[in-house]
Amino acid sequence: MTTSPFDGYVATLGKVSSTCLVVEDRNRYSVPCELAGQIVGIRVYSDHLDFAVHDTMVASHSRTVQPNVATPYY
Image (cartoon, rainbow, N blue to C red; front, side, top):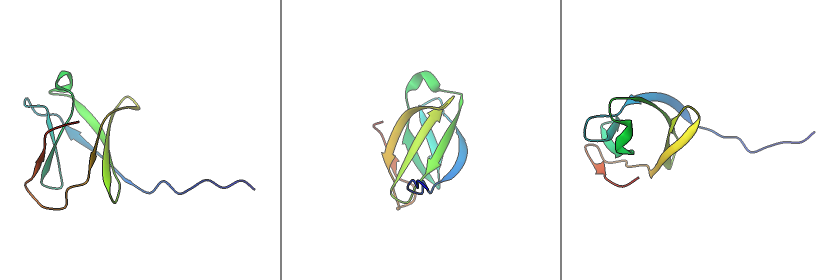
């Protein structure tokens, strides 16, 4: 039997603001500006977050554990 590593994450959705930010757990993460107003999928891992649209990853950020912090670069 072939095994693969466990891909443990929490999946959620977020709306991209007009300033190209997505709020997750009281923090703001940037995504490409052409996604403003759209819903993106978020995979929350223990150390980072991945943002995707239609199964295509559009941004990835290290996870911020302090509340109310913006991460401006995708």
